[in-house]
Length: 88
Image (cartoon, rainbow, N blue to C red; front, side, top):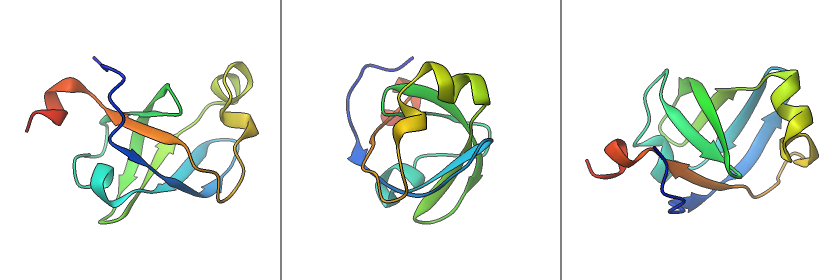
């Protein structure tokens, strides 16, 4: 569950039809592959997690029905993680 508590403002590194890559060191340190992250208020599942960036799955439908399709490279989305992870 997300509380809406913003953990970090990330930087979009790449966005495509099936993924979004975001540079966000604080949030990336809290994530694992298969975890949930809210990007600009949209809950997504992480596919890859590095030390300073993560890649989340993005479906065409999700992009179309949210504001994520309007984000461009170097965009600045807000990021939140699920409550359970946030308390660790």
